[in-house]
Structure formats: structure tokens, C-alpha cells
Length: 493
Image (cartoon, rainbow, N blue to C red):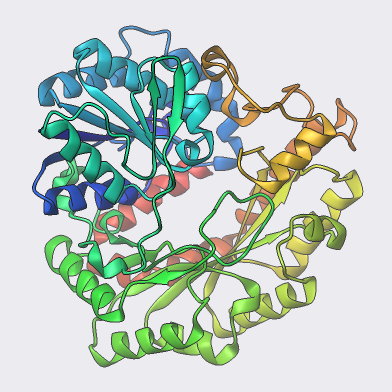
């Protein structure tokens, strides 16, 4: 029973830089391998020849993405089809996120085109909240996995291998039966994460295309105890890998791929302060001589903790600031205050840790004055890098429900909607209407103004130099990454 796991192309179709290996698929694939099944992972979004780096301009390229589906001779889609045919899997597992749902549906279609008997399974964030819709609109999808996929997919593969065509009892699985869509009870989140082996990066078909830094992506926990209204994370209980497990993975990746720059992609890395301190103590004691970055929250850092993290190699931290308006920040249910934001920013700057602040605009109920307050706060905080995004209504979030109440979003999409609507407009009732509290004609001009000001802020030479300085050790050990970063800089400029 051969399984092919596919990460659909998205950034590659619009020639944007895309970092890291697909850690979710690789974790699932590694568990399948551990349980005795033949598995290959195909990252169709691994970009060999990127051209663009300015993510504030990402949406301008979405039309190119949609046009790719109409081009039967498109080289990326031809590669995807040829790869599927070359592997000829019995089961194809496809990851699906809301933004690139059309690409996932297209991959499913190609799987059935190559082999109508291929069993197509979808999993991922969009699958978890929209299993019913996926099965209703795509005849090429046989099963949808909701939530964590390792155990559910392993059980499904086992069922198919032994000729059982009716996997009624597998938790976390949705499927069609006659004229109905069946949703099995949820798969309970695994408490012991050490049960899962390290993601086996050797399962990647194109592993030689990644840099050493790309291979340094690590998850040390799952779940998030917070309830931000724009986020679709449903598992609130945080579960942790043992520190021994994380340290051993670092050692393995460093040995196999010469990785010295790691990225811990936990939702909020410093939720458990004691654990982070013990982890840092291990890194220092074992003299692993690595650098690393993480995501956290402004209310989860102290000066002593940050000092220890820096000593242990932390050279970059990313935090969500979101809005300069207290009113809007409260509507996001972020659970932070501007006082906490300012305090954290002061600590990052004082300790010399490169930090990125993430900001958002265009949320339901936001006014023009709120948007300018966000800009003012960004200038006040002086992050080393400031990222601004326009809110997109993702199903399964409280803010999506708020959008329904305001008449800004629609509850369902058709397959044609996914293929003809720009991804940043998915689920919008009127693609031209971002919010109901800012004039229709005014918002696009406001959006461009804010994005231009953020971009110009980031172009400041001192801020660019701080980024380079934070990566000095990496450049010394991997001069090729210095060259790659310089190419990215020229593209971004």
C-alpha cells in the first residue's frame, strides 16, 4: 500500500519565496512509515526559482495563481501530474489550507485523472473546519481528516490495505456514503507527543532543494491556550514534547543537514516559562552552538527569560501586536494591552534581540482612525521588522461568525468560487467590501497607503543591518545562505 503525501503548489505558482519543508505532512508521513507503510512526501510548493519577496504585494499576484488552472501546459501542473503518475500511489494525502484550497482541489483532480482508483484524502486546517463543504463540492475527494492526522490516516491506510471498504469506526474521519456525508467522532489529540518520531526529512522527494535553514523547522508543542478571534486553532490544551526529544532532534538535524539556524514554530513558544528556561539551560550546557527563532506573545516575556533565551542562541522573536486601537484589540480577544506591548518592545530593543511585530488591518468594525492608530503604534514601538496584513475571513473563527452577522461574509463556497475568486476574497459576500465601517472606495487606497508606509519603514538601513547582524553566525558557517539572503533583499527592494 503506497501513500503519496502532497503539499500543493501556491507560492511557487506566483514565483514567491517559500521557506522550510512541510513539517505537518512530514510528521504524518513519518508516523505512517513507523507503522510499516510505504510513504513518499512531495512538496510541490518547493520553489527552485523564486522572483518575489515583498509579501505586502502578494495579493497582486493572485490572478496569476488563478490563471494557472486554465493553462494545460503549465510546467508546475505538468510536474505535479507527472510526479503522481511516477509514484502511482494507492492513497494520496493532500494538505489543504483555506488560502490555497483551489490548488488542493486541483491536485485531487489530477490524482483521479492519473488513476481513478487512487484514494484521495484531505487534511489540514481547512479540512478540520470545512470537511462537509469539501466533500459536498469536490467529487475527487474520498475522505477528509479533521484534526491531527497521524493516527487517523494510519488507521485508514490499514483499512484499505486489508480490503475493508467501510471505515465507519475511524475517529476523525469524514466521507460520503450513498447520498449522505458521514462525520465520525473526533480523534482525541495525542497527549504524549513523544509517541511520534521526529519528522523524517529523508522522505521528501526533493530534499536536496532545501537549505540547511529550511530543514531546521521544529515543533516542540501543540495547542494554544488563547482564543484570538481571528485564529482557527481549536486545541486549547497545550501538549509538550520532552526536552530530551527536542534536543535529540536538534542534534540529528544538525548532523544530517549541517543546520545551525533553527525555527521553533510553536503557536506561543514561551507559554510554559519553566520549560523554556530548562530547555535553554540544556542548550547552553551541551554547547550545541546553534541560533534559533520563535513565536511568542508580549505578555509571556520577562527580561530575565529573554536574557537566558539570548544566551542559549535565540536571535529572533516574532510577536503579534495586531492593532493600535484598544477597542479593535479587545474585539480580537487577543488578551493583551498596549502597555504590555510597549514593555515587551522595550525589552527586545534593550537586549538587542531582533524582533518582528505583526500588525493587522481591515477587521470587522474597524474605522479609518483605528488603522492610523496602528500605524502610529508601529512607529512608536520601532520593531526591527514590521509586517502588516489585511484580515481575511477564515472559517471556524469567532471573527468569521462576526462577519456573518455583519453581512460581510458568506457561510459556504462552491468549487467554482475557489477557482474564480482571488484567495484573499474567499468567503467574502462582496469581494470589494472589506469592512462595513469604511467607505467602499476608501479602503483600497487606505490599504495601499499603509502597506507602502510599512514597506518604507522596513527599508531603513539600520533595520536591515540589524537583521543581517542577528544572522552573522549563520553566514559564517553557511556563506551560501548569505548569497541567498542578498538575492532576497534585492528582490524585496
